[in-house]
Image 1 (cartoon, rainbow, N blue to C red):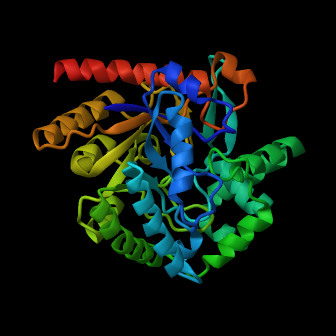
Image 2: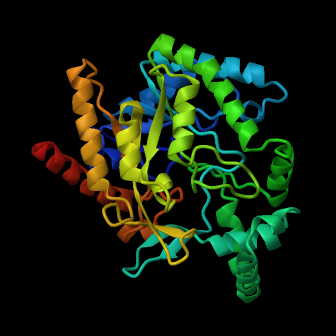
Length: 391
């Protein structure tokens, strides 16, 4: 398996040399300054590629080539955005980059309520507290239809929590939820989110699924033609938020996705952290079921709390999902592919990490500290080599 490291470009305070010293050989990055819907030109791609190569590394995976809201909702100039997406796929292939991660989450990407949740050992982790999120939805965002989406108990708990919060705690909650896309400096405003939610007024889960199917039928033939593998990232968390549908959360969702375009270009980014927070997701079974279409792996651990809809990110080998068992399945799948002439290793990255040691005083994108990921990558590397020696 190929050890990769996410890098958010020249402004990332965790540098390419940090990644190299951590032992990674591949870089996972994107053209983060390009708005969704625009073409990634060969010149732009090669410029980023040269930056990576200057540090002795390889740009192995694109994460992400973003799908515009126009495509997700099929409105306005979505057909031009689809054509531009296909052109970007061709340009990436011409530059030798053939694994593309994307997601189909409406409005917000990953969502957390705390960016610095203190663990018993003094490390800091990302956390999602369902009651805090309900409080944000009901009393900070003040979404007009929020009342009907929460149970009576959750609403009561949210009222009590919100009343007890200081103004600074309320600001911190809003900041965490509105942080925007990982690796950027962008934070949505409350009005931005309200406007984006209003645009989804007529898009339910069935409609969003249909739009995903149309997207795949448009882009997968192009990816197939040029030898690119597209890998959808699961929803994070894998359940509806803010009244928005989420359609890449379960095994049934992943099967629907693969059925829309059965060619080999249509694949999965298997994120153990995202899928693992749902009690009803059997992640070990899912990795077996979909192993032949997993082209990229995000290996991280989460632990559900007493409230099963709340979770925090924990050390990589200590969460609810048995990562060693997941790794075993991926190693066996990689060997199966090699026997069939596919010698491209499955890239994985140590996804997220707790803030440890010098991370605590060093800036980083939420979830992407240097030392915390180095620890996680070292643990995963050891587990992979042990599995490879034993199977």
